[in-house]
Image (tube, rainbow, N blue to C red; front, side, top):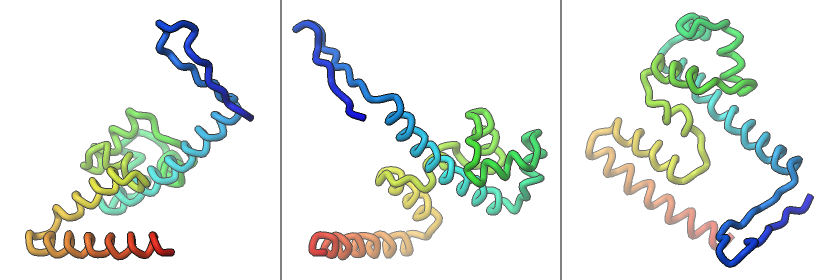
Length: 146
């Protein structure tokens, strides 16, 4: 369905209104939410396993059923903000680490790389930064020619 832009009503009205079909917007929103739920679920499972916790143990600490944790991890259900805060506390990670994980945004990926690099000693960090820079340059050339 087409979208259209309404121009300002008067020269003093600086508002531009964009109208998009509700069905199209709902489909886009649902797709984005589904992808986010999948990424978040994978990160919840990864953090749980990193802490050597079972779904049952996490569920008990949250006061929910084990199936709730399973649904979060499968991306079938998104946790509420309060549950997300509780999960971050259980896993002892910042809430942003759960939300940011698996993001396709380059800024989020850079933060994830920085977190990983901070686990290394100085020499290893310098080597990794050089390697990452070199690989990015090679891939950029390959992508521009291919």
